[in-house]
Length: 344
Image (cartoon, rainbow, N blue to C red):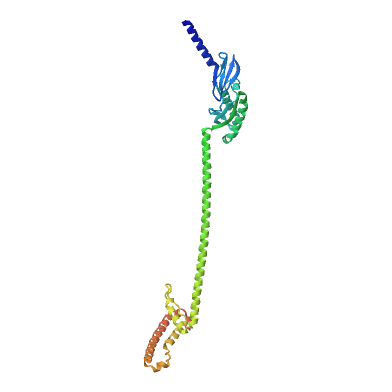
């Protein structure tokens, strides 16, 4: 009885294990190849699948999503014989699980080696400067070559990106010096342009200031000339309107003589011949008696005032005579120096 029970239990376990091996669940965006008796039979799609236990062999799942692979930097020689390290990134997707499993042993290794060889061919025809500035061209050429070569492997290369291009250290230093020189050059050019613009603006400002100063000076000169002209005109009109006596003019002439002698460099000064005439006119003016009016002849107070006026006139006459004498004495050195003035 116990033997039959053990045999039944073993059969139940074997049946359960067989059922489990017959049922295979494949996740979404995955695929699994099935071989029957060593030959490819079919590819399991996502979902519930049934296989024949112990006859069908199910291989590991293949990811059908787009994958990103970053390869190690590879040394590449440019056309000008410089070794640069280029790091690439590959975006690809498995489109045929059967070809990816049976057409190539390891499609990742194959893609890496194909990328390196293609990259060396493309970069080998470019110099360093063109390599650094032609990443899009390199990417497009790599993608075209890889897509054609990996099509039979059941792969589709969506894009290839150059992640980094590292030139030698000496080239980096030279490039830094060149960039620094370019920046210094641009800074010097900008400084020179700023100074030139500043000088232009300063010159324009000085020009405008000079023009404004000239216009202001001209306006001031015109106004001053107009003022002097009006003053002279008013003085001239006043003189003609009042009709001054020649005796008054002679007296004014005598008042100007002391001012002529006040100059700091005048050691001697010349008295013109008109001085004698002016002194004579002044003396005559003060020596003549004023005519009496009819009212003064009849009024005693007026006669007293007239007498006092005559006395004042006499004193003025004496002062004029003394002025004439002083003027004659001052003229003696001049006549000694210039004999031709003595006959005047």
